[in-house]
Length: 268
Image (cartoon, rainbow, N blue to C red; front, side):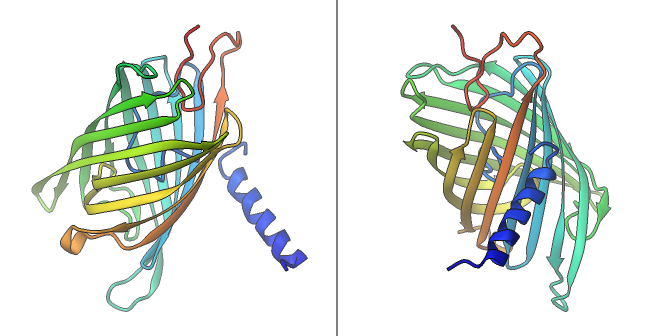
């Protein structure tokens, strides 16, 4: 049986995680992005935690919908990393990661897929092992195909590239990924992806990730997942576990705009 002390510790840790996002995570920890936007006058607070045998990372992001076709993201992350030489644990922090995302076309259930384009940069500010080795940038396109009127199956595909200027040298990389979200029962969904590289982290290898996503309501969502690297040589990612929570706020005073759980505007 779970003791009262353990129950209390679990509740406290959940509460602290929710407080750290401002009000109470989502697209992340999954690397493959979807072809949707937040929507006009909507803001998303997102946190996600990722742990592997070398590090523990806590990410924070703030996404704001400028209008129905453009959104901005500001992100930062901190945590601990173990030194390769003496296996000592050191704290690290880096920020900001900036991204702009644009909607080319929205997807239609059982119809034409949606398309978005995103571009951004990660700046070498902060301290510790998480700080990029130089100035980096990324760009990628996302495509989402929807099956079922209730968005029973979503398939996402990404392709893009990364750039890193380090030690007076230019480094370029290719990233791609394919992921899916399948409705299991009511708000519970199964999610999975297969990726090569991460736009946010230059030089990562091939990996997969599987997990569950639960929509508590239209504005609150949680994720639980695990993944492992399967290629990439020295850049192969170790086995990791992750979880996240996100909360969405609407600043539309008129309250006329309606959105689906994934951020799509509902056309009536």
